[in-house]
Image (cartoon, rainbow, N blue to C red; front, side):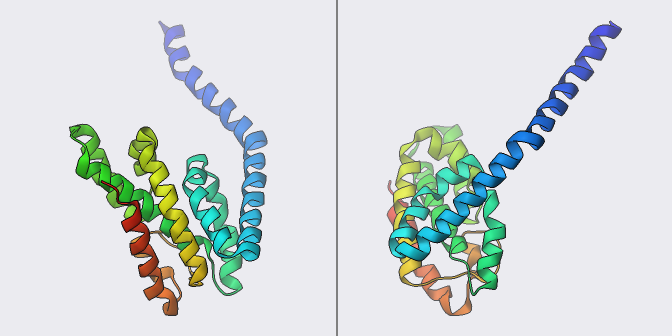
Length: 203
């Protein structure tokens, strides 16, 4: 009995410690390097290609969220903000709003009660800047809402670049993100956000 109890307690603990150690020593540094390289590549693409760069970045932003590599962007954003403003935050807002609108469309069309409940709450959180529930709970599962959101986000990303919308602070990348946007860009930010949302809202 004691042996079984000890095994029940220590086996998962040891598994967690070993996995955590491997992640910290090997996987963590690799993901950090990959994320930093990705961020620098996106910055270069945006600088060189302008609206096309914004379109490409916005299109792939949600898949980047799926991998978790978007967590590497804040240090780069802080450098961009110090240099005059970040394009990453407004583009992330476009991508998040697009996934939220696609998820909201699912909420309004599905007859499955459980999916409807998840989609309703998830779309709201996505509009506020937290897209993981919408992506993993609804859009990725159904696939087509994810791709519709990615396409709409690409339009929003191009608009961000065309209108030179910049953020001067970090925050929740969504409709409430206007508080982080440069004061002169807030109106254009909402225009781009509403266009992106309308394109993604396919019932």
